[in-house]
Image (cartoon, rainbow, N blue to C red; front, side, top):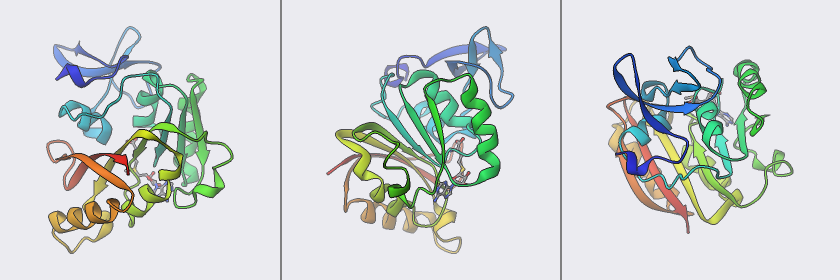
Length: 211
Ligand code: SAM
């Protein structure tokens, strides 16, 4: 499904297996081939969404607000092909690794911030970002997306990975996903959803645009 891949993301062979890849300094021990580094969809919900052929709207070069950056596994790939990439993570420990990933990436800006408090980084993140990527794996995932909608351009995209168990471990994932979709519709129009279970159990990938 390479037609849905942004410029700067290619399918390349690593040890005889074709895999998604971006060009950049390796971050998490992933296989490399010259300047290219394999993008492991088992470790990246956005990687899984691309691997599954979802229409993310990513073209390469866009401005990105990434919520839940952790130690930089996925956001480092994003910064390899995107434009300015603001990476929000509220846990200090992974941010140390994130800072290391940013050393070789001059378009990657780590922010030690809480994604539930967008006012604390509103002075840093430019408004009208093209894409919000969200993978916070915490309760209230729809609310986080709604609260950060203010940064998104009118024709921008939200690329959201929802982890059912983070909302409620006791409920059926399908019921959790339905609630998230409904809450999200307060501020977004959902364009596509896809179960990511081939790579991530009980996760739903959502592509949406602001209403
Ligand atoms: N997106 C990462 C990747 O693919 O490389 C993995 C993210 S991990 C599943 C979820 C991360 O979200 C954790 O590092 C957690 O600390 C962070 N997180 C959860 N709630 C958050 C919040 N309110 N603000 C910022 N980060 C948050």
